[in-house]
Length: 243
Image (cartoon, rainbow, N blue to C red):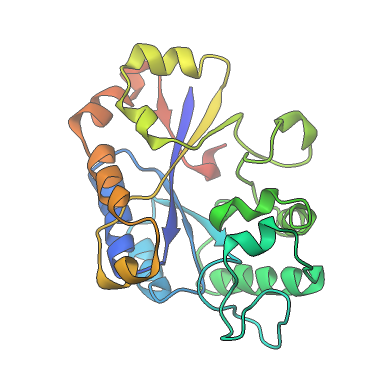
């Protein structure tokens, strides 16, 4: 089995960035996806260039921080910030041209760094909402990027490169190897999503998901993780560029 362990939110803040790099250098993390509109973006790119073996994709967002484009009216609140996830879940009107242009700008900002993205996913999984999915898939095709398999049955997306199975719960890593083999026995490729971080003031003040991040960092760098997720146990750790 080939396994990708991907950290969301690279670029969120310096504390998040350092946690992700630590999980890569001293643990089993293989991949991350980067927010291009958050305060930690430039710091993340600096760390990425210092760690070229870490696979880095693009973490498109509509629910965190401010947009990169201007004169928006369906994606932002009165303060110019992206709306929270509930706005999109309640099926409020969204101008899909606004959405396309904003996400294209986020992708292009990442490309301007000179780093080749390994894949593409979204913050809070907004890509699997009905009105947003077609725009996400259009951009994946245009930029020829693999995507996270959080959309349902892989067979329904034959034109897109993705893993066979997507795991939402990093706590799976705590299981003995026998349970992990049984859980994923039907799949050749799996992604496990995680959110490791060190907690800094910006993360504490702006995210609703804080303390579990330090626990996930501890999990990813644990002796159990390193002794379980390796070739001796039939697991090859890869990133999206190796699909």
